[in-house]
Image (cartoon, rainbow, N blue to C red; front, side, top):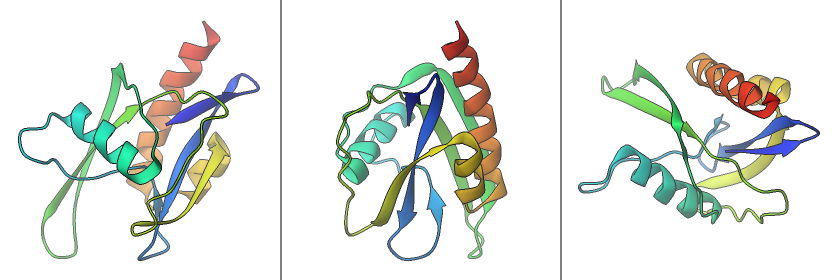
Length: 130
């Protein structure tokens, strides 16, 4: 999720309520949901934002969790108009923030999420330049 600020994207990051982990809104598939449906639902649950995804972009990564399970992550982008209120899901999210690209990259906890941000930022900057 991003907003245009001075011609560049500012990214919404969330901090987990159970750790110091900073990342993107995320969650698990429920029932027969598609990945975009899951993304829209999870964004709303965690931020109260009714997102519209840009389906021309998606990035994927996967990694092994300490318990041996495979974690699969698909990142979509969604532009959020400035002035839209963000209300965090208190049970899961301890902090939220909008960050420019460089700050967001530093704030993200894991390198694979930084790589997803790199891909999204390249896409968004090209889109904003048009």
